[in-house]
Amino acid sequence: MVAFVTLSMGSTIREERDACDQVYAGFDECTEMAYENYAITFENGNDGRPDWLSRKRCNYIKAAVEDCGNKLIGDCASEEEVTAKKDHLLKKILVEFQNRRNEWQAEMCPTVKEHMDRMKAEKAGGGNKANIGGELWAWSSLFPY
Image (cartoon, rainbow, N blue to C red):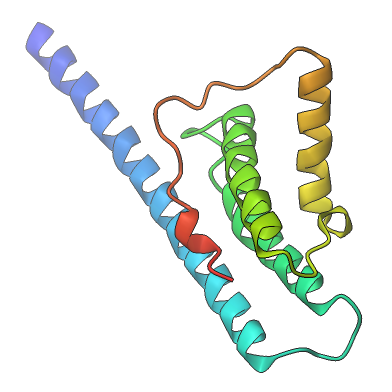
């Protein structure tokens, strides 16, 4: 009886891990598609409307970070954990944009504005960060432009 319980628990853990692996694989596919769409848009060039680069970067950030990231919320990660991971990525993206010194206007992007508001609130409140564990998403390749 004890052996059955142990084997049964091991099977359940493996199934949960497999399910999370599928969720993360779906996330990876989602971010790849978001990048492909962004790259195509970038290659097509300026559409002539104002703030083209800011709009296209914002669309990409929303798709890759917000939309794809939200797919992770559930049994594999809590909303708080996913938000903390998204904030970590957005910090990196904002630094990259500042280093490029081009027409990026962060305040025009709702996803970035929400992140900046959370960071201000966190700073004012003495920090209320979610624990994101030892895993930091390897999203550095998601934003080459």
